[in-house]
Length: 302
Image (tube, rainbow, N blue to C red; front, side, top):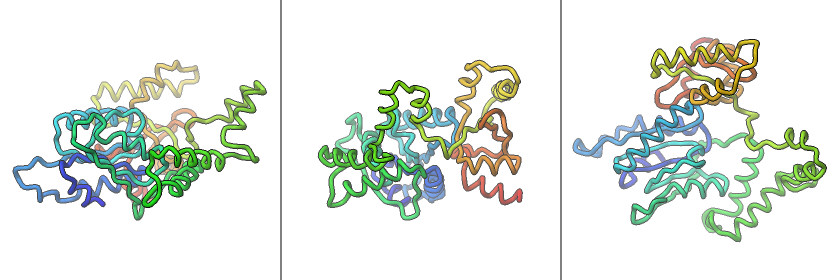
């Protein structure tokens, strides 16, 4: 797959995969590829990475760089998780998307020739041989339903008839106690039981992830000191205003909870408050909290 991506005409390709581990693995393959066949006169492509293992500020820097390079039509390969499908306005002539729920396929396609600057766009849906998927049950239900309705010899992801059947099956399957998906929330609203609505409704499933504050070595000494001071404020016994959380947000990434537990036990992270931790280990300048490098570090420490 990496070789096929590198051979795309124009060398401006977005590839969206389903897990941070897949993004890290594919990015490493693309970076490690020789790419010398283009000839000395051709500009060497830049290979960039986006995932929630990078801090919000780091991701913003990469997105700004990608946008600039695309405007200049310079060779750029981007490997990303689905985060690029939510409100990120980028325009690639070619998009590769690992098989995913139908709405994700549509969002990825929306990053292909969205500004009409090319004669046509190309979207390739593929099934990674060793690819992973998010662990949430709702995602598994959605992907299984997508594979029944969309694909070769089936409907296209924007087929309205197929989409109607897809969403009906998906929501029915995600219900509980014989109720369709969302019916329980609506029942609680009709009963005016808003505290239980707040407990039951969850827009983002964070059961498997945990926030991590990272003090990147690329920051200036003054910036690092400010982050350390805000972390200390969160540990104070007196309530901290929301401005501290807002200042730390650009410096926050997320990790699976089991990786955070391992990092704490190996002294690669320190607890701050609640489930928030501060990272004290290595941060890759390209891939952030790179899962493979974290495993290597943990093994070395053991």
